[in-house]
Length: 242
Ligand SMILES: Nc1ncnc2c1ncn2[C@@H]1O[C@H](COP(=O)(O)OP(=O)(O)O)[C@@H](O)[C@H]1O
Ligand SMILES: [Mg+2]
Image 1 (cartoon, rainbow, N blue to C red):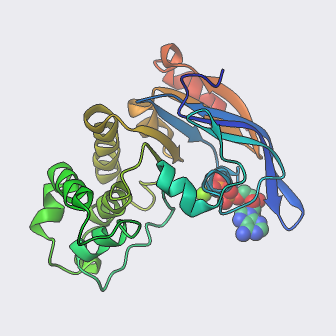
Image 2 (image 1 turned 60 degrees about the vertical axis):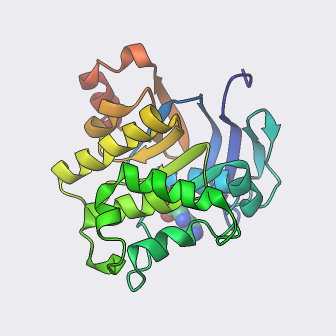
């Protein structure tokens, strides 16, 4: 059902230079829902994110955002509608200050005139006080966990309705990874955002997700609903059972 969903990926097929990677993928995200797509390296998770943002054309299927078909509209239009990606690997600008990095996220607004930019900056600083403390410091001096928070903060500057997070805990020690995912839960609980989360850290993701898809070799192989999420052993088995 499309109604009531924020994002609906319907039967997505795509790939690179004629080599098919995704095979009829169906994924949806509801309001204020954290939906995790879990799967091993090479499963097609990042490809799914790129297709959702429009960085990669889909060959078949549709992308529906708030009831509107956006399959063919360009990426920057998708951002304006309220879809933002925090890409794998963060890609912050290490030689710019923390605040300059955040402002880069607001590129679509007229920064001097638009009060929304100041409002969003305040939202970000309230969520991540450490970024406010270090606002004038070069981003490259932040720890790995703080850099991930900066990348999330920069995405928030576009004032999204749904945030796509591609492996936000990559390369972080388990404790820091847990902290980053706790802040992801805050985005849902305090800002009311919908979140599509790609992760390889299964158990950590299970702690915050409302629903989980298991992806393997370009296909969704299993869906765990909210009431299934206590069955961590089973989730883990599905995940490592390939
Ligand atoms: N730019 C690309 N060109 C060609 N093949 C790619 C490209 N990016 C990813 N692939 C291939 O697509 C498949 C899925 O990759 P990816 O979506 O990055 O998986 P995941 O994010 O789940 O690790 C892999 O077989 C990978 O080699
Ligand atoms: Mg990936």
